[in-house]
Length: 427
Image (cartoon, rainbow, N blue to C red; front, side, top):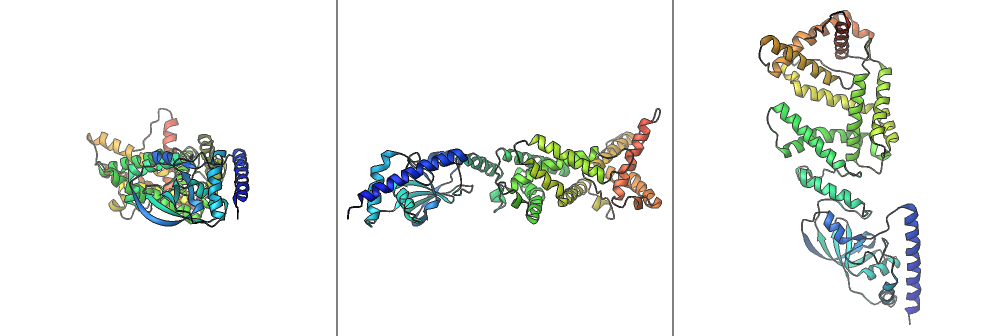
């Protein structure tokens, strides 16, 4: 039986389908190109290769080619008329049930690139064949590559590979996934690690090895935040983004929120719900202005409704305060807790000012722990004792003793500042 006429019709149909796919991809702005093997290899560092033998490979995972990526589209439909004769010969062989040799593929991550057999893959896919026999050589790479990857995605893969090479987080914490869907995020993550490293060094009074800082940042800063996302199922509302993206946005919003809370501390009263709402509005405006290309409205809406976000930030701030001051060890019965964001930084400022005054009085530099104890015993606790004795907290059930301490100190400072010739007496 002569199958050549049928094969000619098959090619013409496939060629027309390729035309319409190209038109649709142009309208929808969706990528329709095969991945060039050399471009992937140049962007994603490869750590070696090994032959894994004859395999049945899902055709839908074959998304690139070594040398024919311009001859076929992403669905391996023919785009060039010069492929007609070869394509038709392969199709005739299929129709005549002639057994064809396996194709040769490179496997990178979960995707495959054709080394030899582009026309065989094209015909098989057009005939709705699900798998194809292939001799496969696997190339090891540090980042995941999946069948939906595009050429534009390669930039992100390259950035992620460089981030992994720098931090070695995939080796230090196997299974850690910090992949981002937004360009430029990895530089910010590296900055977070460097800042964390600096704080560790300040607390320990010694330089901290880089990879130790990476582990500490991941375990103590990144992972607790991401665990909240998972518990609250936040990513289901933002399916196009990753945990790493959301982590950075929360950290940025958190910084704006802290600053807004500090600015909204009332001069003539303890800040209430209204101040908190104003602070959230201001933080949201700052975030939207700084991130015009992001779905800022949706993110801000999520952040505003996220009571867990305040709780998470407060826990982090309190833990950082106690780690910096070592108060739980110095004064095991210590009760310092603020209900408002950004206030632990103000407490640290009080300690630093108190340390300076002590140094001025004693005429020498005072060790930090000594100044912490002096501030707690001679400044903080006496004022809190007065607050308790007067029963002031009962008038502000939503606040804490620490909130009232900060308000009282702020009021005292303002009164001294505005009184004739007045000077702040805050030690």
